[in-house]
Length: 247
Ligand code: GLN
Image 1 (cartoon, rainbow, N blue to C red):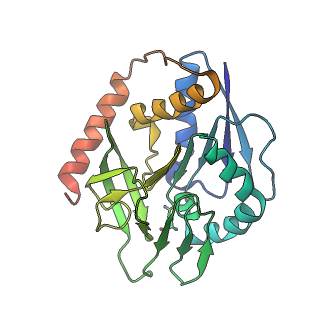
Image 2 (cartoon, rainbow, N blue to C red):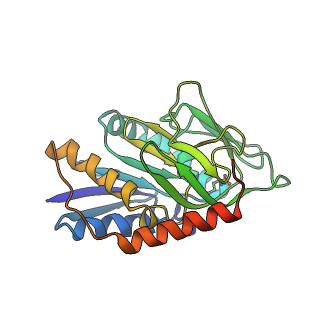
């Protein structure tokens, strides 16, 4: 079986090793005899007209976001809106999570109009305000995810928008309302770098399950020996709980 993943702006949006998410997904597919074909789509390039099973977009600083957002809106808003509507799993980390919202007001006050996939907005309070930096633990419905966050922007979900999870320790969307990230259909926005997926194998497999379920109907992902990943996950959760702000 082959799955196709579109990686948007890989060279411009690749902060804190977010590319590690692609490596984790590719390896978890390979262990199961599934070929993950990664199609990189950079600035001024079009999304291929082939079947797309997954989309990934990483994070970056305000400057790079400003470079990407015009191209993202002009070139991809229709395609991305359609793919999200069709239930294609989409993982958007930090800066790209912000660009998929209604708008992101950057540290210098300029307003980057986003794609409106997530009915939310983000405001960076300025460089004089401490960033949301540190280890983070987030409770999802049936699992916990852990990682590292580093963002100045504070995200506010509109009423009724489902967060990805509840912050157990760390800042999350805005350090105040206890939410982290957002979900609409199978699009997941999150602030968690790390990169996210290597230490959160359950979440990685959830994305793969959704992709395979959408294209092949009911599927059963073969079990993988995740003892190493689980040990890394549990150690990171313990470290985060001991170091950062409990909510
Ligand atoms: N520039 C954005 C902010 O500071 C996103 C940062 C990131 O992607 N880590 O909030």
